[in-house]
Amino acid sequence: MKTYSFENLLVWQKSRILTKEIYKITSTFPKEELFGMTSQMRRCSISIPSNLAECSSRRTNKDKARFTEIAFGSGLELLNQLIIALDLDYIKENQYLEIRTKLQEVTFLLDALQKAQLKQE
Image (tube, rainbow, N blue to C red):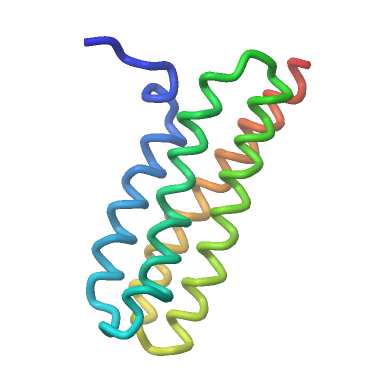
């Protein structure tokens, strides 16, 4: 079976794990949030590895950097939603800190990847 280049990216691997964590944690959210915060957080989290996968199909580094930038934006959107979930008592402080740490690592790697992509232009 062929392995695509994005599958070897550490940031893609870590964002995939983060997505799984978001799905787990949002499964405990109130049912009335199913089409609100639950759906939005899941879409944000899955947008990160999805944009990295799409990024790998682009020919120019400038194009690749754009998809990496979109993934980074989804990460920040997810951070905002995590903060609000904490404010609404949908998650506990320890859950928030654990996921925020993982998200911080992903966004750090995304930033480094985008800088490298732009440098190669």
